[in-house]
Image (cartoon, rainbow, N blue to C red):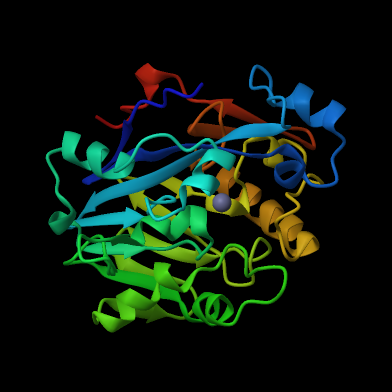
Length: 298
Ligand SMILES: [Zn+2]
């Protein structure tokens, strides 16, 4: 746990690199909602809450190479947070995602498309950065950033409950630079890569599906942020705005994943990033994928 090595899935001609913008420590009560701590702390072993009741939360990001395009899905929490907030969530290091891209031989200029699952700060903080002149500018200067119309509206006009995580500096500079692309509903990104609406966490939250060589993978984002949220359907994070809609979405995603034998990519799970799903009667079991099986399809 903690040292999350980048790994790659190969689906036909498409390569999916599971990267990370690091790890933050978030309140366990927020993460596991109504679930009593005695239950969730057992379910996430060997991961443990710290003395402030915080649990580690991975900030995974996808880099998809498909049809000659380099597509990022989400951008992590980025480097604009004040020092005090960084301490509160134990965020260590800078340019975490950018250094992982660099390890793959890529610079920010090489990214063609950024798809945002939603606009909470831990998913899109890396969209922009503070430059030497003190301006907030897009991190990926040649990319088009794809955002759901309804999600952008909710982020532009947050309510009392959502304004702590919707920050305009994460998306307004994209529009000012002509790099924003508004999408509305399920949308093809390139052949073999598309988004699908998965409401509950937010009203217009979306997942990203990859299909190649007859195989499927899905980036679940905050629709199912930890594997245990599939195994225990009633468990829903306190952050979800519409918990009953979240449960409906999870059931639909589980049926889809079982039908397609899909690779599941969990964005925040501190135990594993990639898994598969199995049904045993009415029970769902999430199987973490071992390192040697991750190059599946090669
Ligand atoms: Zn999140």
